[in-house]
Amino acid sequence: MAHTHTLTHTHTLFRFVGFVANDGAGKLLDEMPADMSNHDLVMAVLNKHSSRKVGVGAEKFECDRELAQIRRAIPSVMHAFQALASHVPPLDHDREERHGNTIKALHGDQVRYELQVDSEHRASFRAFNDDGAINCEARVQDGHNGRKVDYIKVFYNHQLVFEKQNQFC
Image (tube, rainbow, N blue to C red; front, side, top):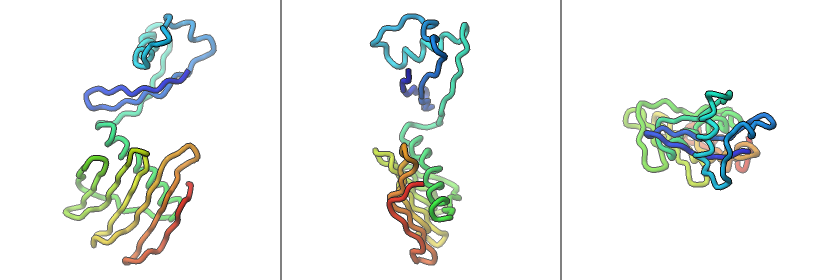
């Protein structure tokens, strides 16, 4: 049986993914009503840790859910640039500003990159060179068939040098 539930505690985000058990392991648990909440189900299993072996894995971010989704998109965007364009966007920065579902990373007073994740988990990314010119941009979405790249562009000397649309990587 696989259930999903998100537990939050003091701005630390935990995401419960599911259970894996040996055949017949359910009989070792106390009887649980069918309308039991996911949280109560998780707690019932975890409370058996003293009498049964229970392994736990968690994904943890020291932020809220929206910021966690933004941060989770960075590896997908980087993979798309490396796999499709053999390009590494400039990510060096010394501070960040957050505006809702968007992060602006700055190096001094210059915007280094912007990353926005919408409600459909599409990541829109744009990076800039030291002179403020656009370096690259892409829109990427993780899916069951890999990462869907709506578009990806790389610029050099203010000129578009690479562009692809509707790719998977």
